[in-house]
Image 1 (cartoon, rainbow over the protein chains, first blue to last red):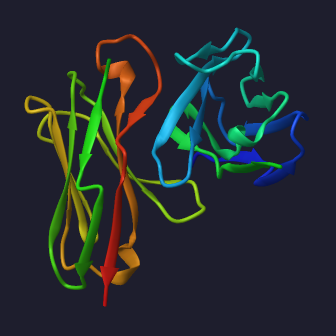
Image 2 (cartoon, rainbow over the protein chains, first blue to last red):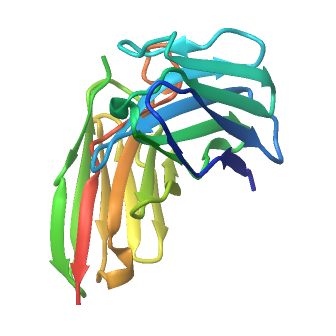
Image 3 (cartoon, rainbow over the protein chains, first blue to last red):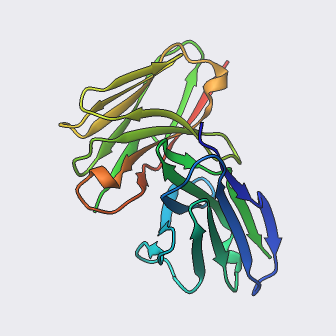
Amino acid sequence: GAVVSQHPSRVICKSGTSVKIECRSLDFQATTMFWYRQFPKQSLMLMATSNEGSKATYEQGVEKDKFLINHASLTLSTLTVTSAHPEDSSFYICSATGIYGYTFGSGTRLTVV
Amino acid sequence: ELKVEQNPLFLSMQEGKNYTIYCNYSTTSDRLYWYRQDPGKSLESLFVLLSNGAVKQEGRLMASLDTKARLSTLHITAAVHDLSATYFCAVDRRYSGGGADGLTFGKGTHLIIQP
């Protein structure tokens, strides 16, 4: 079946620094990748959609300059949280679509101190 | 704008009992998903419902979709403790006429099954 690998699983960073999260489709080519954010005890909210080789499409209210998305190949998308602040602390989950439908990564717990 | 409402949001039940979680959505869609999430973990796919009248069952869980009523249900039969988790429904925006991609999730149902 389809597998999506997400790294790191946990990261703690200082306020003002940047953090990069990787999302890889291991055994299929992902035409589209998605990034979701989940605050504690809340639902998943779609942040942005990315297609290989093109600019990401951000959902309303998501800051493009803060959450940089790069989808350099059909198997890799990265999310960079720039100048992170404590309010950016959250669970970030990527998802990829291919012939198997939506497959989710294992998530990244970001804590900004 | 597509809205997905799930209820109840919290459910505490005893082992052996039956219960149903409801998922209503605001625009037409022919594709709906159910996921399970354990604390601190990502999503585990349970069901993909692809058309009106679709019914799928796996063990003690059964999901159905009524696209005319814009309603999906997740039924739990003879609940066991291991089913304690948070359950999400999600509607595929690609099939809801909006043209956008990705999933819109309900708020989730936090299910606790007590021995």
